[in-house]
Image 1 (cartoon, rainbow, N blue to C red):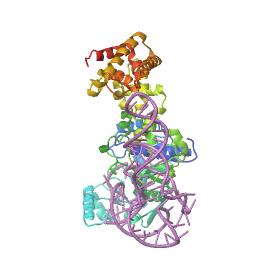
Image 2: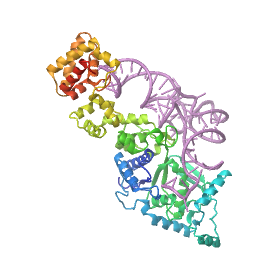
Image 3: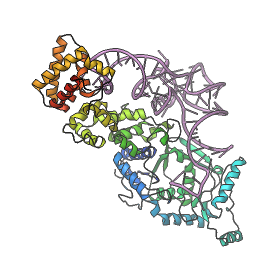
Image 4: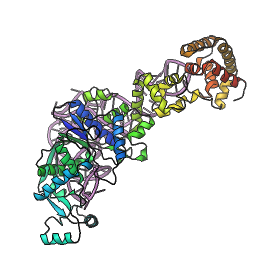
Length: 479
RNA sequence: GGCGCAUUAGUCUAGUUGGCCUAGGACGCCGCCCUCUCAAGGCGGAGAUCGCGGGUUCGAAUCCCGCAUGCGCUACCA
């Protein structure tokens, strides 16, 4: 990522763990920077002291890194435009806020939050827009000093000018907002902390951001930001507002439909590349039509202006499908390595690698591993159907023959197991039996279940001794 | 209430200069094949009056207008 002048940013608020929706915004910025040779800035928007925490900041950075995203500047890596934490930039915001005040572009507002709340409620009740009513817009000096004498601390409010605000969104085209619908907004709180809009604009300007790529929930905030750029005398960046990520219910993503954060998905055993792939595919269809892609591949073909502008509904089934695809692309050694974390009880097994290989095509999310490996453990008690397979005339014959053959031949490893099995199969196929009739009793004797990994793997993992023990236990009738 | 954005099958999406769209692909669903089981894989199927109503046009998913619905903003949250 070297400079061709393009600079984008991802600006999370550390008020919780990284949400999939935020991760999607981060991804679009990353893909844009990557595909266009620009630089990506990570900026932490922690002006809200009550809700922000350093722990969440760490968690967000950890999750972004886990996803495989990286950035050129940020609180953790530094850079020429720091600090990259808004809480460390209050002086900067204050300076600009007072400059606007001095220039008459902002004014002191003495209304208390309670008063404002009341005004808003009244306006709504009377069917008027709940905008700031301008009480303090042209406050006479004497009125001001008396409010000041009451001990009221003023906030600084931006004086929104008349006229329309129009801009060209990279996705939506021209968008126009009548400024009468905007309303004077706070740029500096009465306690000295900056308002969101001021902080964002000052930072985007000072950090040299050329393209702001963010969620559509900010589309209506953009006129405020443009007004601020104008008043401050900075050139505004280009804007692109991508669609929002919705719940299956059509609302904002919430716990109601399951996991919503990146960390939860990691715990469930989703691969970072699958998550990224899925999030990108939610609004983007690769020109080549190839859907399963690694992050670097996506960066190669990505075009942020080709994103769909309609909202995207989260579909877990499709994420699972992609996860399975990416899991299959993983080298076995890496899969086995990852599997250890999700199946710690099995990880110590000398043939753990073989076990994982046996079930690899069945895995959709890694957290299913313990269940998938279950057949390698203690056989399940036999149900009616299973008993029929095993205690039927054919079943008994097969198990007895198997015991004899297995005890005589033995095997070591997968190839050996395959050999001994195909020999057994041949014997019975020649007698007119179907393969299923010969293998099902065996499978059930070994696992107690009708479904599971291929028999060859079962034998290879269990080894001759344990295999024989299990079959004999069934033959002795005690299950 | 005001303003803004969005609207193709259950879901994601192709379609963007109107005709090759009797609307293409993917997930999911159903069926068949393969197979020692479950998966995986292969093949096939059902599923969309392109939100609704007008208009422009020889012709509209594609252009215009209205409506409806959803979402967002309208905070001393971000």
